[in-house]
Image 1 (tube, rainbow, N blue to C red):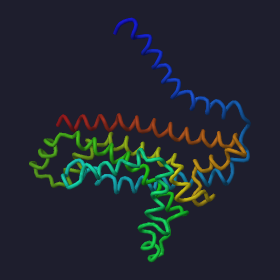
Image 2: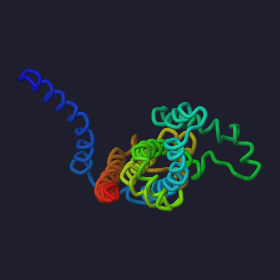
Image 3: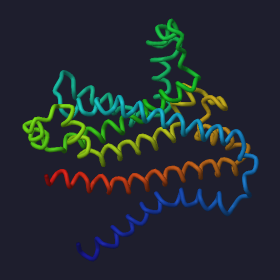
Length: 269
C-alpha cells in the first residue's frame, strides 16, 4: 500500500466508524447525562411493554427454530423444483420495507385476507392480537436464521456425515450428534440476529397488530407512542433496548467461542 492510499483509507474508515458509533453513543450520553430520571416511565407501561417484548420474542424464537431449522436443512441438502425461487422468496422479508411486511401479513391473515375467513371459522382472529405480534416477529426475523443455518449446513463436509453413517449411525443420530454440533456457531449467530430483529420490529407490528397497551405494545411501539410527549421516557426506553442488544451480542460471542472450540474438536476426529 503506497503512502497516498493509506490516508484515504484511514479517513474513510474513520468516517464510517463515526457514522456507526456516534448515534448509539449520543443516545446513551443524552439519556444518562442530559435528562432527569424518567419517573413517569418506570411504571406499568414500561413493565408491560418490556415483558411483552421479551415474552413474544422468546416464543417467536421457538417458532423460528422449529420451522426454520428443517427449512434451512432442506435448502442446504435437498434438490427440488423452484428451489432458487423459493429460497429467494424466503429471504425477501430481509429487504422488504417493514410497513409493506405488515400490509402483506394483513393480506394473508387479515379478516379479508387469504387465510382470514378459514381461520375465523375455527375461532381464530389474528390481527390486533398478541398472536399477531408473534406472527409479525417470526415473519421478519426467521429469514436471518434460515440464511445463517443454510450457509452453515452447506459448509459442513459431507464426508463427516457419511463417515458417521458408515459407522452405523442413523440419519437422526447423524443430524443430532454431527451436523448440529458442527453448525452450532452459525445457528446461534443466526438466532441472535433473528432475536434482535424481532425485538426491534416496528413497522409490520404496528400495522398488523396495532399499538394496544398491555396487548400488542412492544418496546419499539412504546418509544413511538411516548416520543412526542416525553422525549426523556423515549430515550430511556431506547437505552433499555440498546442494553438488551449489547447483552445479546456479548453472550453470542462468548457462546460462539465455546461452540467453535467444540466444533474444532469434532472436525479433528
